[in-house]
Image (tube, rainbow, N blue to C red; front, side, top):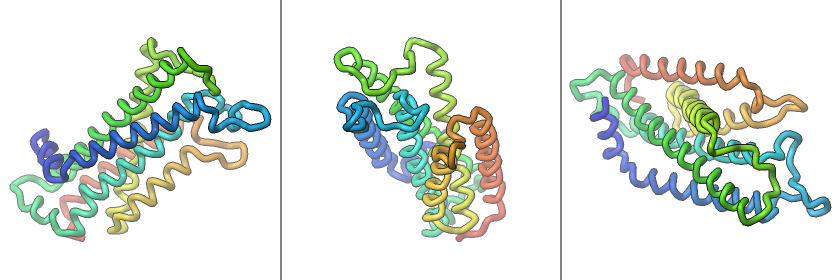
Amino acid sequence: MWKLIKLEYRKNNIKKYLWGAVAAAVLLGIFMFALAFLGIANDPDTGVPDAAPGNEVISASVELFTSMVFLVFTSVMLSTFIVSAYKNKTMNLMFSYPIKRQKIIASQMAAVWIFNFTALVLTKLLLYGTILIGSRFMASSFILDYHMGSLGFYIQLLLKSAVIVSMSFIALFTGLAMKSSKAVIVTSFLLIFLTQANVGDFTLADNAVFPVILTLISLLFAFLSVCGAEKKDLI
């Protein structure tokens, strides 16, 4: 399996995605620094962050923006690695290998998941670390509600990152079902709205049970995508 994963990285020129992830992390870092210390989100009249109730803490903004960026980024990679490979017939070559189709699809999904999970975790650590260092010298507009010396901080960071990256499997299943790369991207945006947006006074962003359910659904769709590969004809 690891050989197949490395093959996917070479075949899809993983370096361009690596530079894309680095660029996203740097831009997010600059934006979050400006958000926390330069007052770009502050109300001009009160001088305090113009944030919805419950979002006065910096972790809410970090989680929101990193989740948005990397959910879309993961979906783009899945679209390129798998859906586009069906459409441009390169999957035909992959399926000619003396390897089960299911194993090939699973390796492609694993390659994307591993890359983006790692990138998301490192990006979050960069943002939290940058803000923590900045707080030593400047006053933050947002409340710093995390403690990087706590084990619980890292456990929560890993779990949240795994949930976000796994959600992209829902978008992948939709794209394969609709035979469309664009459907993968559109679905990822819909998932962002579903998990982060408020509907009246109700939001799923702070619901502790919803991420668990969503992760189980994501894994179910991943399983269905892998099982469907054994009998799926070229798109």
